[in-house]
Length: 565
Image 1 (cartoon, rainbow, N blue to C red):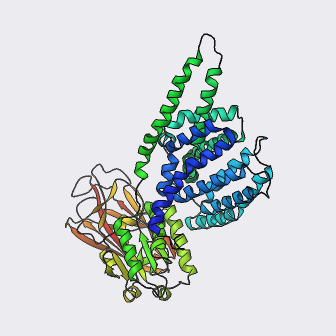
Image 2: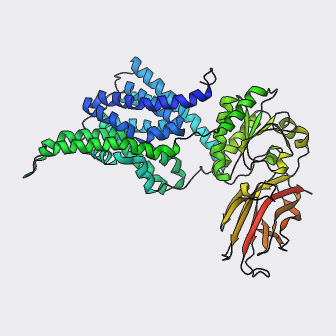
Image 3: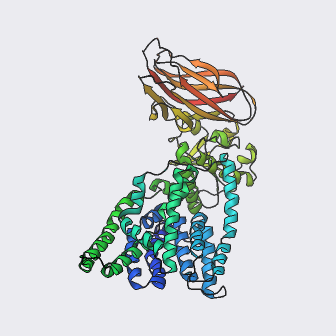
């Protein structure tokens, strides 16, 4: 849409709201066609209490668009009787489009269609369900290829996070949960229409997918989306309608259930009414803009003032755990506002060698690998061709920021917060400098980052613990492009505490001894042989009894520099 001239910011603000606002209508049309007016009204009233409506329109826009396209397709397909009907063809087209919008969500919902179509209550011939599956095959093939590539970039593992807590489930399911449980039980035990079977399959699939994250963290990202897409309005609307219908008809001795009808209706509408503000309030933390005004103005300045003879390369960087998601966001915004470009995730030291920055986080490796693949596909395979392309750092998109002294020297600030690589300076760059707070891989002990005036990389990577627990250490990954002998320098604050042991790939290369000078010092370790590839540097606090200060585990690290001898 941006390519055809729609302003990107208008699109970002307006389209998600329109899509989210269309969901009550789409659900009401679907329910009205299969379960009648009463259930359609209740499902519509339940939709503003559906957490997914708010969460998807906040920042999961691909999921949101796929969901709305899927609902449109389902309304058409559920009324079709043959493959030749126009509504069937339109529905298949929308389903195919949804698959290219967000394939995981579409495959998930397509499975629900296929499973619910195994019943005799299906509203359409089985061949329509099979045709729907066929419509998603092209996107599924692209997805499979892409997934194999990601696994190659990450070393065979998907990007994982910690599993969700029970409280997170309650936040997502919200006040509609009692009505959803009633609806799920009813649709499972006494379904009267295909849509009730469809809602039950959808609900149980979401639950099973959600539970899978506690079996394997590899499914976390899928299970989180599965819980989010639990069909709250459908189940709650069906549950509320059925309770209102069957309660007066129950024959229980000595109990006049007919008198409970009005209180039951009051309870149902109280739940529906409360679900609106409660769900909105829990979704508020996600209702934010993921681009600052400064970032937007910087991108607009680049778009308006810079003209490139060759494709520009935008550099993004952050802590391992945040780098992947932020890099994708920044890459999308650069595409929307500036236009065609290439991206690099990591440090200029590695980009100058046309090499990936060795991130330890799985997601960062995946995104870094994707970006690097596009750089290679553009014919950039050496420093000479690289420096023919403008290299741009947007200050707000890059950490550490302000830029470290050793990075800023390689760039020229052409506008506040906008830096352009200096080709002649980059040509001479042969060493690698790692800001340790940004590039740490793993650690044990209470390490943290703190801005210090003496550092050249903005933040010091520090640990301070007078209890001296065992194994206080931090690891960092080095990428070596060419085998050879190197000198490794470590800049740190020389205080008084237990000494530091330095090792590479498990082999000790030396010890840093504190002399209590209270100033920054750089120690060099010469003659280290590195083969091509990724190597691990470990800095561990010596647990031997110190001479100066009893039992103090302390380190304040600035950066590590690697120079070929």
